[in-house]
Image 1 (cartoon, rainbow, N blue to C red):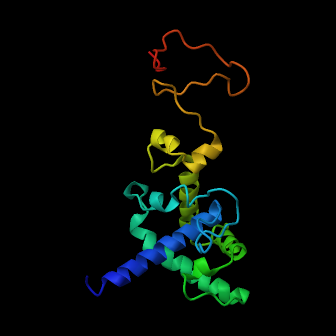
Image 2: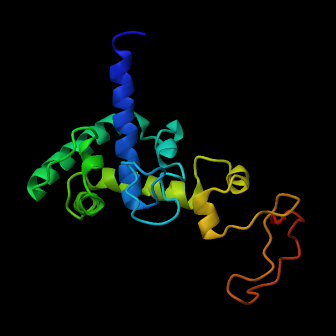
Image 3: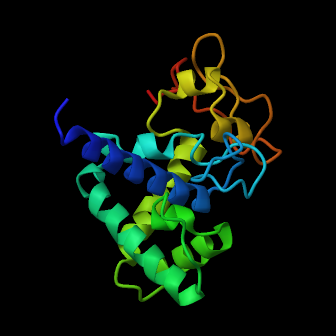
Length: 192
């Protein structure tokens, strides 16, 4: 093990905790264990962290991986200044954003995504990934996510597909049939 490995491990831990705390601010959930610092426990049930927000952010296909370390540094810088402004003494054992109480995390995120903030687009993007992780499990195979009980998909009540792998709904979404199926529609539901 090189002398650099602990620093990289520490950097990784800071990144994960900070991103978890940000995601938990967007879609709050319950603590994973009693001393969980990243997840504030502001809401019952699983939130964005349990739904895989960090995994989604770190997926190369998401396109944000190269800038995550810079975003984490920026967020922790903002958190340090916010703590000073709010008269808080942050716990030095965790990243500055993680050290903020949930209400202060929320206030800071509201400021970062507010119209006119110069970094708004970056923070809105990170917030959208937290929502996507919860709402769709975008980084997962949908059938596997349903089978594994993905918390967001379960909360939304997405039904399991039929035995043939296709989704069909016994009730119409608007409570009434809107149109007849086109006569040239194939058995798989595709237009002819």
